[in-house]
Every structure is written in C-alpha cells, then in structure tokens.
Length: 511
Image 1: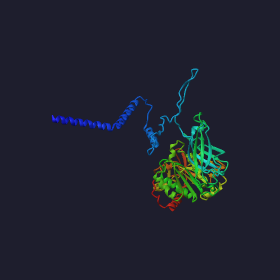
Image 2 (image 1 turned 120 degrees about the vertical axis):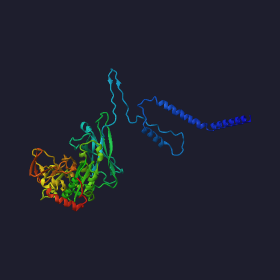
Image 3 (image 1 turned 45 degrees about the vertical axis):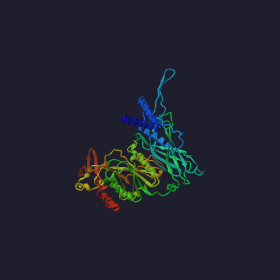
Image 4 (image 1 turned 90 degrees about the vertical axis):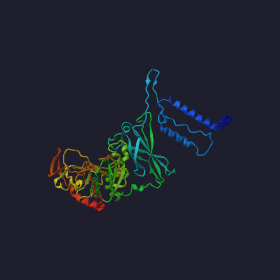
C-alpha cells in the first residue's frame, strides 16, 4: 500500500514537471508549429503550379543575395521593408498574342527572343592624327549586307573646360569594309572618326565613345544603338609628336593569323632569313591564333629577346565566326596599331620569302619606290615536294628553302601577289593589297623585288623531299618545273647570320 502511494506521488510529480516545461517554451513551440504549417502549405501549392514556372538554383541564389545585401549588419528598426523579389520573366519582353480584328481577320503575332550576332566587336582603337581615330572590329555581316547601320563618334574629356569643348561629336564618321565580301557570320569593319578640331590638346585625358546604330536593320521596329567606350586616354599619355616624328622602324612585318600545327624548323628558317634581309631597323609582329605551340615559341624567343619580334595572342577571336581566323581584322589592327612606327609595312605569309637581286638591297629597292604609297610583289611558286638528287644524302640536315629547288613555270595562271605600303597613307588594308589609301600604287616591280612561295610547308612536320629529281626541267603532276637555286645559294649566309645573332641555341630544332 505504501509502495502504491509512493508510485502515485512520483507520477504526479513527473506530470507537473512536463507541464512546467511546456509552459516555459510555449512561444518557441508556437513558432515551430507555425513554420511547419507554412512549409506544408508551400509543398502543397507547388504541386499545382504549371511546369513552365520553374525556379532555378541561380534564381534562388539571386534572391538570397538580394536579401543578404539589404539585410543590415547591425540591429535596426524591424519595420524596414526588404526589396521585392526579382521577376521570373526579367529576361523577356512583353509577349504578344494573336488578335482577331473586327472583320474576322486574325492578326498573327511574332515574339523575338535573343540575338544571333553582336552589333559590334572591338579589337583595337587607335589615333590616326590629332583629330582622327580608327576603330577596328567585327560586325554582323547580314546587318551590313542588307541594312544600313550607322556609326557616330563622341569625345568625352575628363575635365570640362572651354579648351576641351566638352562632349565633342565627330563631324565625319565613315565605315570601311575591307574584307572584299569574304566575311561569314561577321564581317570586318574599320570605323574612321574625324573631329572638327584636335582632341585632348591639353593632355588632360578623355574617352572616345562609338555609337553603333542598327538603323532598323534586323528589326525595323527599333533603331538600337550601342554606346561603346572605344578608347581611353589617361591624363598625360597623349603624344601628338608621334604623328610628325621619324618612325622607329624602317620596315615592319604584319603577319596573318597563325593556326594549326606549325613546323618549328620552318619558322626558324623564315625568321632568320627575313631579319637578315630587313636589317636592324626592322620588326616582326606575329599573331597567334592557336599555331604558336611550345616548340614554335622556343624558336621565337631569341628574336623576341633581341627586340625583333612581338607576339600577340589572339586565340580569343576564334569565338567569332569570321573569314580565315579573322585574317582581315588582324592585318587592319596591325596597320593602325603600328601606323606611325614604320616607314614601310609588309604583308605576306610565313611560307613566303621576299627576295631582292644580289646587286640591290631592300633599302635601295624601296627608295626607288618611295613615290608610291603601295607596291605589289610578284610570286615565284616553288614545289613543296621536289628536291634535287644531289641532296639525297644530306637532305635531312638542309633547310627547307635550301633543298626545295624546283619552280613552277606554268603559264596563263593569275598568281596572288603580296605587297608593302607606306602606312601613313593608308586608311584600311587587305590580304593581297590595300584598296583604301591615298597616293599611287604600282604593280611594275618585276626585276626589283619578288617572293618565293613554298605553299603549305609551314604546316609540314616531316621531311619535305618526297621526290628526288636529277634534271633541270621536269613535268610533274601536269605542271612544268625548272631548277631554281636562287635561295639555295644564300642559305649558307643565312645560317651564319643566325649563329652570329643568337648562337647555337636553335641547332637542335625539330621539324
């Protein structure tokens, strides 16, 4: 009986303790139950929302970041409101629907989404003088082919005084399409801006803006204009004496885009040959579109260290579908970037070798052509397979232009020419010549200068000699060839020149 009373007393004590705990945490329990109720309600409602209404992880992160940014770091008034959540349709315009007109005609609606191409892609913007600028880039080819997009330039000085004439707009802005219609999704555009007076004379700095307008192209309902900060001149950086001073280089090479698996040995031969030809006051600009792999870079490094070569990585341009790795954009960028740094700029490829006769020099030839703004160079096409049998035993040790000694003499063929220009007279350029320059052009350069073309050899990473010929003339694959040892005869001098300039560091270069 005593035990039963004791057990009853103990049970009663337990119940009182539980009731006390519940009473002490009543507020917290209410909050927990309310949260559970809200979660269950949301889970139920989500089942009835259509599938097209989805909330992605990025949307949730965006909402959380907005809330976190708005949340105060220290306790503040709890009555402050948070910003509204972003709309799930913030990337879309108002959707139009079909409409039935009074006469029973159904007017259909069209809803555009996205954009197939960019309006303008800049590669470089450069001064062309105290009051002119050139902007080089890509633009939508259909837009330029079927519409009339327009461009306008504006200069915004950093300091707004009377001498700067705040917010000057160019009086003359025109575009040049220098790729001869070869563009693909994108075409090359050079925009020239001319202002009515010199810009940034006080050297206080400013920004050049390009206003690129579609003028209704693509969608006649809208005239979309993109404002592009094309060029910024920080205070104290403008050097107007550059436009009247003597150029740093006599001769500058503007290369096309290098891509693919290039032969380090062929490039080694090419750069040594042309540094010797053009001399100390020359420079070579190489554009890497994916072709300058580690072994090719090792060949260029010695000449980069001596200041003869500048290498530019342009692999990013492969994103934009233009002609031949955007070759026309690259040469135009090179023209305007180095326009006032060279007396002459040459345009040719790394499987082509410029040649002047023994009694001439590159200086004497170009001095004789100084009255012309541009001259073109005749091609000597060489076989990339045929070698003389006299080299059979030593062909693996000979350089490419030393052993490929058979020249194509087929008549009645129009062959591509390469060229050189005086860059200060050019507004835009092409691959085989410029059609946008002031001054005269001559094609009558035979006997004074020519180039030997070893087509495709730059991409061959194996022995070039496929056939050994013991003859001065041969008809091979329906093409007549004759023995021509013009470059072979100077190969020894080129090798000695390389050894003198950079030592034996490239002696073990592979094909």
